Length: 349
View 1 (tube, rainbow, N blue to C red):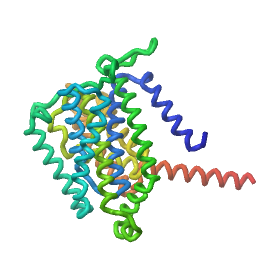
View 2 (view 1 turned 180 degrees about the vertical axis):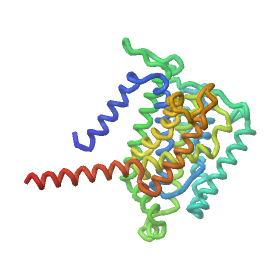
View 3 (view 1 turned 180 degrees about the horizontal axis):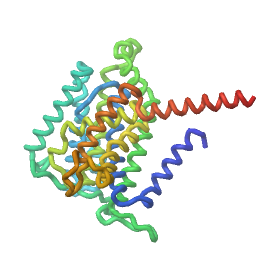
View 4 (view 1 turned 120 degrees about the horizontal axis):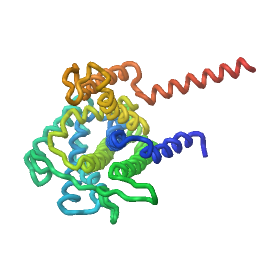
């Protein structure tokens, strides 16, 4: 086993056993972390690897959610069909939106993608067949043959409940998504995306099909967002159209910036921050006097609002001091450790 593979294997082993060490509350938060990481991987392909700014990710998450609701809830199809179908439908929508990026870039593209959020809000509020209308839509639990996530299952003396089922499903899908994005980055289309990100004119001169590359990145981003949306809605069991607002898109941008743009592990690290911080503040609310939690209305700010303020501060700090996010910080620490070790070896010699 190579030295590079050791950390990955260690993280995978930890991921398999961690549900047995933590409470149901934190297992629930980990499920949300994994779901957000899947969707953020897609946004990172579009923004971090291709340089296309998007603030419409919430729209594609909603498309995946309501595709799952229609296929799994109304038609009773197995999750083996409606989970990938949610990604495919969202990907097709992304392919339709992708050509917009051919003429726009930067701020103008961001404004157009914001428009998608408002179009989606009107669509899902008024087309009851898709979303259940303003009152919302129940979503099904995944069913794979005899395995129903609503009831869980037993392996010998070990019982896996609904949270555990979702955790392992999301962990498996995240691992597959990370492997796909990693190999995409090493492939010819991935190198074309990097060339477009670094300079469209230069990329075109080098023979890169800029138009096709942008559309492909939109399709990949939308597909992964659709899968994440299907998992998210199913895990919540019930969603309403107002959940898919601009704030959701902004949170996904925070995820990829804090974690590290253009990296495989960055979306997961960023998701740990974005999902974990409000959960941690909620747990600490009783011991922090400035937080208002539960029936305690004497606090100055709620955990959710405190988390939003922290997102803004951290985002500014990372953009100014370390644009490569947590991954960049870890690389700096690793480089300093290597230089320190080499100096120690030189002194000893």
